[in-house]
Image 1 (tube, rainbow, N blue to C red):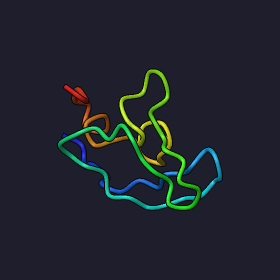
Image 2 (spheres, one colour):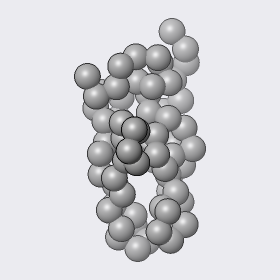
Image 3 (cartoon, rainbow, N blue to C red):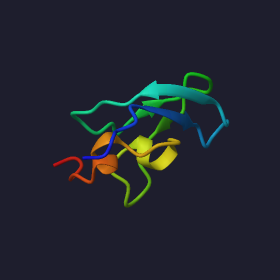
Length: 70
């Protein structure tokens, strides 16, 4: 088992605002509201969560090689 990085720097594609977040380890996060512009982010097609789409680090289940959103 690989060491999982729990934090991801999420970047809003609308305004560029960045925020360091602690990712959930037991669930996917499908929505994220930017605290600067209030845009609600959703995963890009083919991604399981907002961290896989807009984060600096993929979500814990993907990092671990497990199935995500299972």
